[in-house]
Image (cartoon, rainbow, N blue to C red; front, side, top):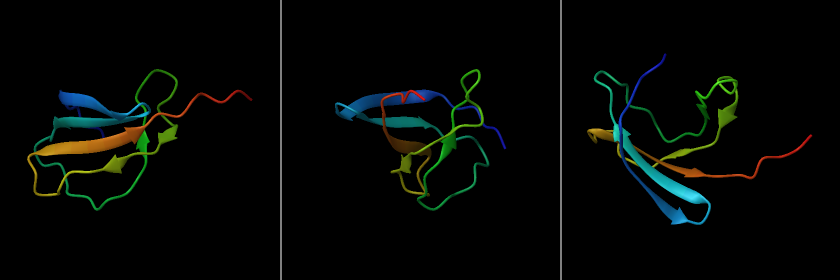
Length: 74
């Protein structure tokens, strides 16, 4: 299931953690706190990335707090 959203706000919480608020698509289902989202950048669609939903399910926006990890070399 794919949804498009608009970025409403982003700000750093710490040097490697960022908080995002995005528009909530109409009909978007409520979900319990869980981690994992696909990066939709070219070539990265199948790679999961950890995240924490930090908004409430009744909110009219979606909030996420995401930690950046340095790229690892194989």
